[in-house]
Length: 133
Image (cartoon, rainbow, N blue to C red; front, side):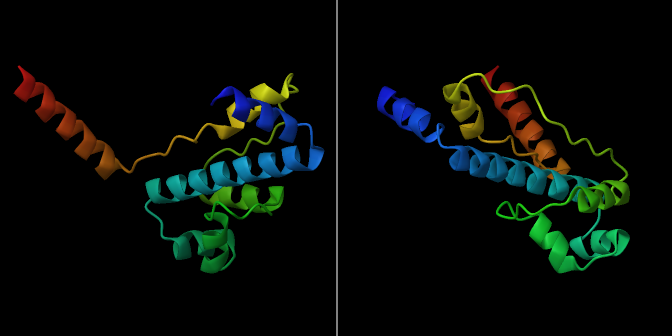
């Protein structure tokens, strides 16, 4: 980020409403990606996960949409139980500077790859190394 952008984001970060919306958006995307990743790793379709949770497939689709931010702890607990994983909701230490929070929030979450993608990536990397020798 350049200095002008840094100053602009610092100014935005002084607005409480903006900070809250930014936290919601960041966490919604992170949760959506994680639910999808865990569901796929468990070999479940959205409909199968919905049946385990006791909801409709459309609700699971909504949960996996990065724009959805109306998660309840109760819903997340049901999803965690259905996926046989732990749910941890916590408040972290206060952010000291708006600038630090901005940079952290703007980091793109790491996308998890499916096993097939990981194997394909590993094979490609191995081929590149063997052709470079």
